[in-house]
Image 1 (cartoon, one colour):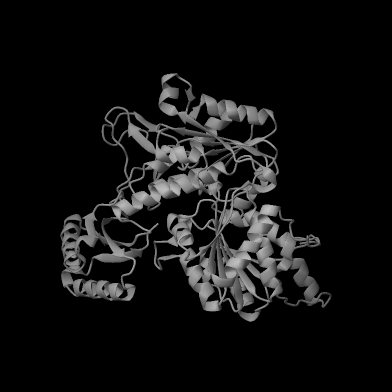
Image 2 (spheres, rainbow, N blue to C red):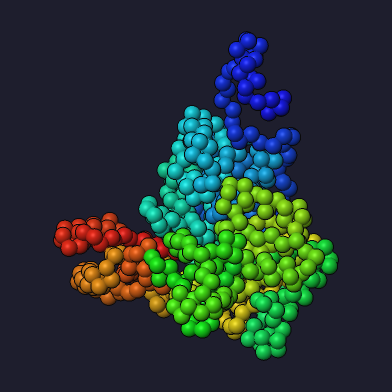
Length: 579
């Protein structure tokens, strides 16, 4: 490649014995050129937190670091990693999204050089085999930075496990099997090696914070941002009133548009968060109200303009957008609603002189997709970033002064007992992307039709403690985790009537064994996926119950049902501690 010649020329030289061919094993994960940098300096609050973590590790195997967004948790992690590497041991650094590895890789490699190993699912099989062999053959000190599958690597001298953004549901794999939560498995893995586990988050999960407050885990808190930077100001926009006043352009309110224009005028950047990909979530006929649905799932198709296809986001089925309605045969097909593709278009129209990037599953399918987008935005080559929940998770963009949440109601109104927790965590995390540098705080504009919702009230004051106490009381009242353990039992069958009969029989049998701890069966929010109809049974179990006995009872029940020939087409699986 350097000589600018092709393989035929090389082979000709080789036949004349003018060149010699040999094979060398070369690491494909070489660090960037340049010398290593010293450890980052810590503020007084960070130093205090670091000392308290070491004290906590003296008598606790697991410690929670609860630090507000931009409090400098990563710098503390780096100091802890250095401490463990100097002891000659290995470190596992877990992150919830592959996107986070891009920025963290650079920060870690600047300090630790070739001791940093990256591992995630975007790597090819050959690359993952290289890492596996490296860890199998070489037990020297290193830090493995990766997503949830990293817990299965062959560590030999593990000394520390860091689980960053521990509250994230991305750590849970629920389909396909094996179903596991990487956060919980990481704690078990650390225990097997005699290592310590550090859980880090600005918005810990209710269960984790409850364990820390009750003394089961150690607890270290940082209540201020690094270098005295203020937490961002929250501006809540009532979209019902804004629409009445005619102050909404597409999905962007006048107040959000004005804030973004002011930021761009001052040379700053903005993030627009909308947790729905595609161009439009609904395709409908204006004449007869026909809505195209996936033939294999009970969901409507989402229109993606980049491919001019309608796509099912559950099974991946694609269909071309019809020119005429398949039902009434009139040319009245139109699209409604906003996905990130449409928000990107609207931003380019609304902010004409700004370059807009989009980060969602569609724009980051290849291995370098994340890195290219994050690099361009970090270097200021684009002024606005439109994204799904990917942009909420720990990314550090110094130039962002405004964050817009286009539809907070999407997260708040999910039919799940964790919906308030998910909504608060997501909104607080995306708010934390604003104002991470400089003397003035950033601005977060939250658009909602429910400004009086308790989650919005706690968000206004960045009040995690208040939210935790409110949510804990709700969980206590209705007997949900952390006061019980929940097991969701899913039953699937291709025949709807047969499934209803089987699920009813299964639920009745479980009620004979567990009484009023059993709820259901019921249809989940999406009741058919890939031609399998679905029913769900919820089992609530007391914390002091024997899980081994429970497992044996469930196994025996499962085996007795599966022994009936009429049940053999029934698919049953269990999701323990669902998130």
